[in-house]
Image 1 (cartoon, helix red, strand yellow):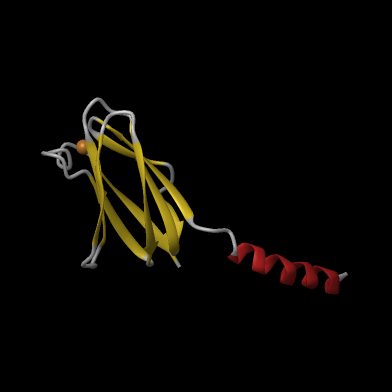
Image 2 (cartoon, rainbow, N blue to C red):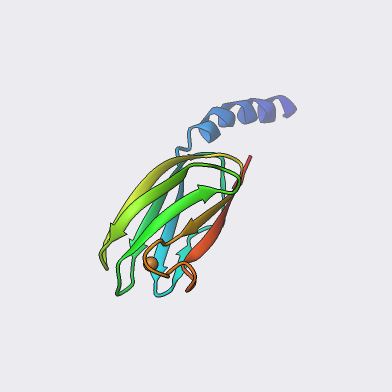
Length: 114
Ligand SMILES: [Cu+2]
C-alpha cells in the first residue's frame, strides 16, 4: 500500500512541473486595478490586461529592488493584451502610467512565491 502511494507520488511530480505559465488577469477601471490573484509561483507567467474602463489604460510591471520594467501598450476601452514574463520570487508592483492614474488608484502588488 505504501509502495503504491509512493509510485503515484513519483508519477504525479512531472505533471506538476508541466503545468505551464502562471496566469494573472488585471482588470483596469477608473481608477483601479483588479487582479484575478495576488500571488503566483515563480517562473513563466502570462499577465493579461483587460480594459473594462471608459478611458485608455496601460500596464507597467517592476519587481521591488529590480531594474527592469515591463510595459504593455495603452489599450482602448474594451480591448485586452497579454504580457509574457518570467517572474522571480519577491514582490512586483503594477501600475497604469497614463496621466495621473497611478496616484488615483491604478496600482497593485503581486507576490511571487518560490
Ligand atoms: Cu489608467
